[in-house]
Image 1 (tube, rainbow, N blue to C red):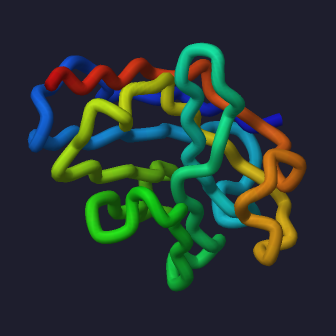
Image 2 (cartoon, rainbow, N blue to C red):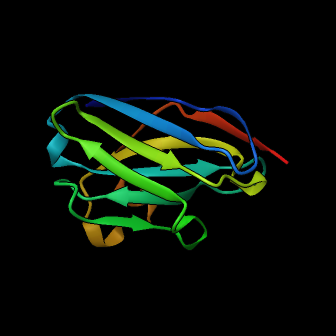
Length: 125
């Protein structure tokens, strides 16, 4: 089992920034691809970004490229999502996820085995 706890969500004005953190405990953190997903009211849960086990490869959905940065600190068992230039359409509950992959399926929910409880991000216009 892997336990994931997100933090860092909140209310921010458009153009602002937030940094989400996800602390992992349980099994070996470096065994897992880590991803961030988000779900807006009435919509499906969609991938935002993912990072390989070593942190050398990162992936982003098109709508956040150039604005969001995913990173991980394997010594601290933590993954981050730095979100800049936030837009109202970024408003959602953000979820951290850990999965065994394969890495090529980083955008699929089925690639992830463990999920956090989510943290709300609200961007006002």
